[in-house]
Amino acid sequence: MTTIYLIRHAEAEGNLYRRIHGHYNALVTTNGYSQIAALEQRFAGVHIDAVYASDKFRTITTAGAISKPRGLEVHTDPDLREIFMGEWEDTTWGYQGYFAEKELKQFNLLVPDWKAPGGESRVELGARVERAMERIARAHPDQTVAVVSHGTAIQQFAVNVRHLPPERWHESPHTDNTSVSCFTWDGEKFSMCFEGDNSHLNEDNSTLAHQNWWKGLESERDINLWYRPIDWATERDLYIAARSDAWHNTHVNGPAFEPHGFLQDAEEHLKQSPWAIAMAFDRGDWVGIVQMDKERYAADNAGYVPFCYVDYQRRDQHLGIQLIGQAVSYFRPMGRDKLRLRCAPYNEHAQHFYAKHGFVKVGEEVGGRVPLDILEKYIGYDK
Image (tube, rainbow, N blue to C red):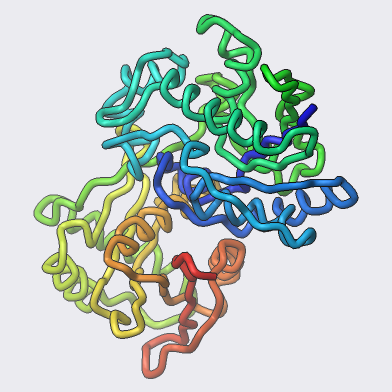
């Protein structure tokens, strides 16, 4: 009898930024690394003969919790990847929920043959994951194996093992990041021992504890943002009002707000790309702005975020990190491996927010009107 622990990867960028990451190669978040540490503790003392993972950063990194203490190699298999979402890859759940509501509902209702444009269906996903799991089981008779895969992939494998008809697929729960399911293989078929156990996590580092989408209740929906380029002709005044609000909230006893320099910078950045200033929306409601400059710090292979703003009526809804996610998706295709921004040292709320999400101080702005720290977040794959 072969025993396989099937583990969902740690919290990754898509989970935090609320972006659709199937085959997209997302990084693990700061919280995700705390989940990996908890997973390592959970498996301390458990005998494992081999470790497998899909060929994505988030699964390989999570697999290290089990492979590294034992000196085992992580074998990668692309058939363990998440469902491929085609043209929807790295778009936001908010965008598809607003502009493709009927199509997204098909995905959420687990319709067997539905697929995103250019993507794959749940039936296709289940077949390839089942092939991979059977290959692994046959390669390790009477051994114990850890396999790290993805949420929808694990869910679909579980319903296949239980031989559930599509109308009962919803009985297989959404699993938390780093949650563990267990299956046995008797040489002919799989059986389930348990599913989606996240007992090694706590209220603070559980991803699902801080999200509501998996409950399926409209009354408790998560806020998932979408973006479009600013219309400078009609939204210039809104941009300046946001700049003014941010200035006065941060520099309470500082110098007076002067819009001219901000306007000049904005117009220069818009020459680089219409997406250099992105307007953020919750359904039909504007909620914020993220501005990006691809020239400053380009020599350091960094993307610069001169302005990240959430409207005062929407603060304390944890939306700022989604704006950072938009900046990551803007700069990463350019090959940038760092994000930089500036933050006043006395802006304690912002400093705490950026530190929580992996930004560290790398310098100080010299010669400005107010003191500013230069903060940096690594967004590359080789650390």
